[in-house]
Length: 238
Image (tube, rainbow, N blue to C red; front, side, top):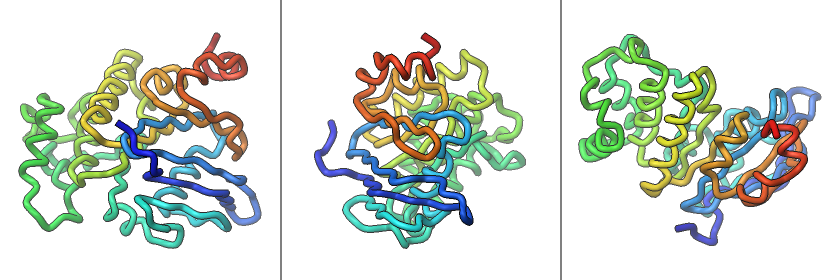
């Protein structure tokens, strides 16, 4: 169930790397309870958009609102404390640590008891309960994706940011990964999926945005975008 107030709202964002204008007048929003995908090829500006949302890079102009507050000038740790969580590209787990230790890293900003959240992660990913003592570096790509998502969920996020979840996974694991994202969304978490695999992302999303050379060139419901002629040719292989 979505709420009418945006959980995340980007308004006229312009981000530069030195003199290079990367993001140009980016405006987008995610409502509470939505699963939104941000699509685009290499060098389209997807990663910079994600870094701007997280506060890793600062926009030269424009505003970012999260959960009703202006966070444009706030730090990454402040935004994470307010309820953003990231599942980074290629998972980036702590390979020499166990599954359980990796999951507990997700709760590092919390000073309350998080045993209930751990149980919920194990309910969502029963395999992780069986593997909790196993070193994260010895897991398969799909299993590592589960740990990365479980770790993010340990912070009780209002918004889960997924950076290229299909990257480096075999086709069968891509499908599994997107099923997991859907499960997490159905459990009540708002999700932004930043992805090149338009077919998979649109198949689970409510809304989508398409980036090309730092500009949003299309924005609509996932249903409408799936049938968009230009998008079919450029991204959907049809």
